[in-house]
Length: 148
Image: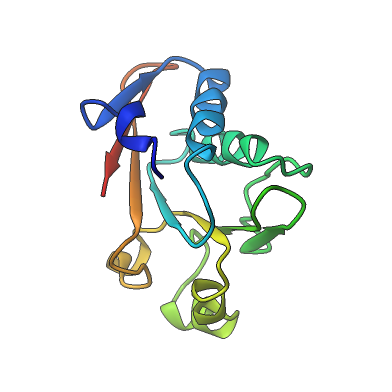
């Protein structure tokens, strides 16, 4: 997280392709030390999974990220720090997250990357969540906004 304010000089950055989104994720990974919770928010196709793929690449995780829509969480333990990649899209209630051990993940020291983190009004997310809001600004252009 240390270098994120340098990356997001004005609080946001424009990205022009899926590869640029992955490159941004790789750059962001350098600042992750473990224990951070990153909430990713954006419409379908905004680039959340591409950003996660880049973060995982930057952390040295060998397993490329796919959206965990059907399993709700993918754990990646082969990189520099352990990562749990969540997708809250299909959850109907917050109790589903608690039932799969959300509180244990929060205490694990892993980096938690959470797609659709704003579900349930963001009530599952801790106060110190690093929020990334991705918006469509063109056919292939996206704006990624950091909110601390």
